[in-house]
Image 1: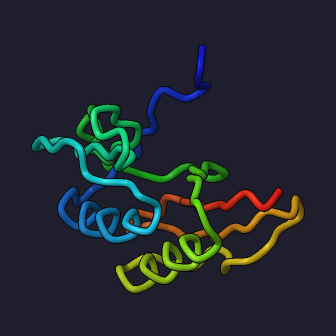
Image 2 (image 1 turned 90 degrees about the horizontal axis):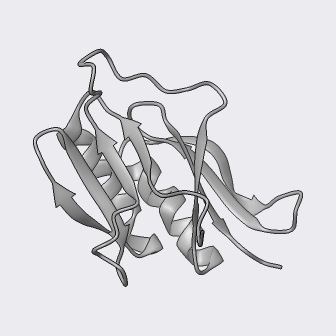
Length: 128
């Protein structure tokens, strides 16, 4: 097994609004839109567009999408500047601040945001 995670999926109540948000914040992380249906949108790394690893979707059970308390998705960035841009773009596109960019307890560089649906997303650049 080469990876612990196959893909991530988070729910949204407004697919169009969520797509606009993620399209913007994923630019500095090198993540692109790879697939679109009426129920979900998939994203992949720019250098591996055929391997979708992150989805935003309308819940399968057709109930309201909610975020999990204590749930967070952390994405890798190549540089501290990419983390900064991720954070800035998130706030400019309807996200909220959950932790400004900076070095954390483990010596790595992080920024934390919540998307318009309240999902907590982190960008991290390894400094070690």
